[in-house]
Length: 183
Image (cartoon, rainbow, N blue to C red; front, side):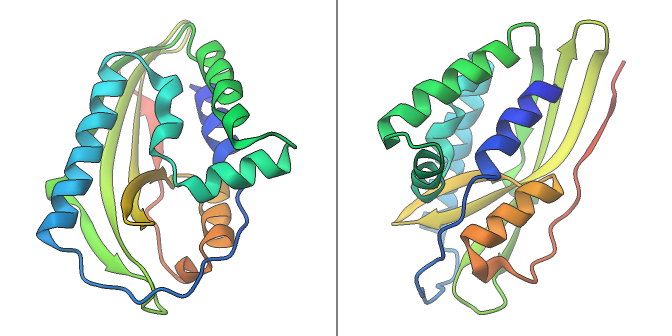
């Protein structure tokens, strides 16, 4: 679990490109359907144990920044990350995973540039020597270039990098995640 969190933090901690001005529109039923589709695809990925494909749900801006910071081409970021996640998850079993869009809260950034949703997320993993662990967090759904993406924001470092990448999120309060044994 710690290695998975480190891999996720690694991704989020590397962003840093400012956002262009955008006029926020309300989240429509079409947006809800697109977000639900992304959640369903993410859920399928998790059920199939393809956690190393999680970068497919991260906004392209983050991937570009990661590539630049490590002197990689954007095409090289995903294979490198997939290898790290595969190693981190080698002995971790995902017992359950759930994002609940029906309990999500919609918001708009203080500068009114970007709409978003905070989706309650629960993950139960089984780790050798530690047993089952329940993680409750929120997943941020945000739109970039007409597509919706899913970003974990349950740790302070993730929120800092999110705000660095998308300055319009300054001042948005994000719920804290929690992790505890789940025997």
